[in-house]
Length: 256
Image (cartoon, rainbow, N blue to C red; front, top):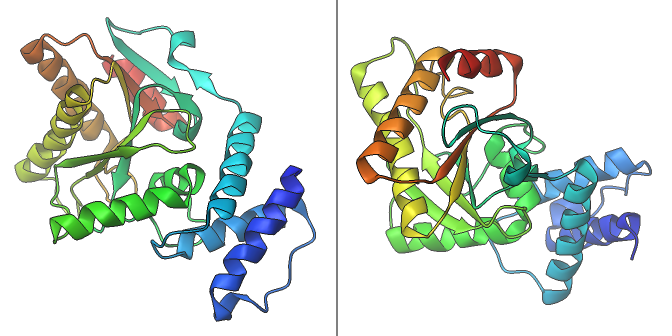
């Protein structure tokens, strides 16, 4: 199957699962189809899918990621010891683990085509990721507390694992409690990465988007917490600070 054929198959299959989507006509253009497919994946509940669907989806997503271009950690140069700074799309980074800034439900972003990192990671990992997260949360029996971490396979992403953590929400003044919770996110992610034998981990800018944590304060906490954890654990784990925007890039360059 071509990418176009895979995309149309996946759209039709997802539409057939829900009466509310069945009458929506198939878009003609490739970009419109990509957006429709992503939207249908974003709103799909955590349910099993057929082996045929998963095989087509996996082929489609891996090709889509390859077309975006995969960056390997081995192609990057450290900026300070075993610390790296990389600007790019974390769903195209090949390393042992990437960190997802999740919400307390831990099931990914359900807003169609929302450009948050949670949505992007779940979209390109595939529908298996939401189902795995749901299994973890069902077993846990309650929402994920701030400052902890869970690990799942990365499925179709070029990384091996996705580590999910819920950062603090800053609605007003930044407090010492917010700072402690954010530091806990970084420590928890590093702990679970070490427990699973990861030699590298890529952190997004946890809590600095819609959660409202000031960017500079967050970056300072991130770098210091990672440095302290590595020293305390005598760890050689390679840590990538992944940024997307120019403002975050400038802040991390100055700190590192």
